Length: 313
Image (cartoon, helix red, strand yellow):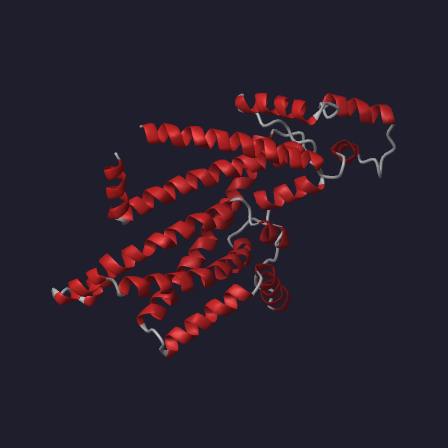
């Protein structure tokens, strides 16, 4: 109970510090949201109108005062309204979040379908031709920028073959190209990580002892080697999941996919402060929850972690 309370207090302090730092940097960035809202370059407006709107939004106040106003609304579970769409920031985030979740899940499926078979084969057939092919894939995949891979997919499947859409959202076909782009890019890292983890586990003493007792290789691999090898994979997986959910900005912009990544890019361009700040906090909370979930999974997979926790008590 004490550990839970301690982690909760640390999380609140971290959230407040992050919100303050991000708020300061957003405000210090060049540009004027009032002019963006009034579209000064296209519509003739008076200086009085600009100042009136700036005062209405409390942008004439010092930065620390603006942050205090925002912090009070935050503790009332109000992230404000978008300067551009006039919609609540929470509604904006929640309306885009399902699209990002869909892209995240499909990308992870692609990654798992590629990395687990290739990483396992690479470890089981070490230094054989299968291992060389898998390692070559991992090397090439990790060297290719994801946006360049996405452009290749657009050129091949959308422009040349015309079988898949290159932008937008609506059907499962719209998710295929961005999912393949993200999934292949991620799988290159996981193939090498899984291979290394499996090889390390195969050389452990408990594996040799299990073989000496006559346990089948299949059972040893599935219930001992593979399970233990998943611990570093799940740790990195949690980081990848947080990165994906936070908005695969480049891919969402490249494929004009309406997720939270593209939303925050549009907000940055239009100087939509409430949306940017809401995005930062929303993603921070999600990543913290994901890390807690990963920690729980690691404790389940590795009894040593649970035993250490008991000993500390």
